[in-house]
Image 1 (cartoon, rainbow, N blue to C red):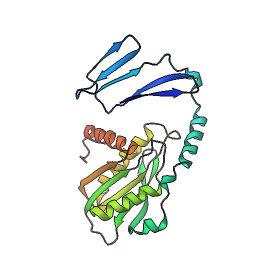
Image 2 (tube, helix red, strand yellow):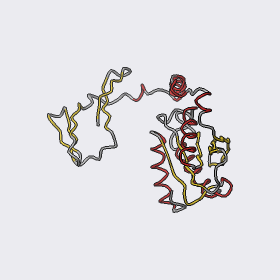
Image 3 (cartoon, one colour):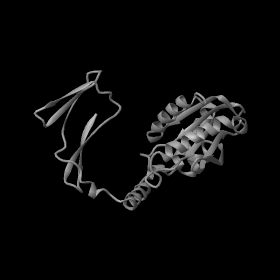
Length: 220
């Protein structure tokens, strides 16, 4: 629920608290520790930060982009062998979908010889909002299409820090609305659009669902 993170650049401590736990109340202990008590009885005690972060030490935009690029290079789990990919034969059609920021790169994945007017799963990959779509995401979509008979729209959305929030959320929302409006072109049942997301993508699914509820365009 909470943990300490040591920031070497400022020599201080920051405390992160998971937003997945709804806090009911909290109280301080000796002005040094605090306890969160959740509705289900979970108690977490962690140390308060000694001082605020010096914002002058915050990385520049160029530094953040460089760090993100280096982080993406280290994601070795994203590599999938051609043999493994061929174990799940499916049609993968690249698409360019118009969104407010230009075009969104997406891939329509479907079982070979599959039916038309089926449900559509819009898949939003994970990666801490900085990782792009990988071969592993395509493998997941192939497996999902073959297992369910659904068509999968795999979205390679814009990521941070090159495209800060809410760029990715807006893009995925626009893709969902486009898919609903162009159901005939996609060969899907517009009443059966499913939003699917992993980690950061799951975060976007929640945001898109809220935006769709507010707009009333359609209900996923």
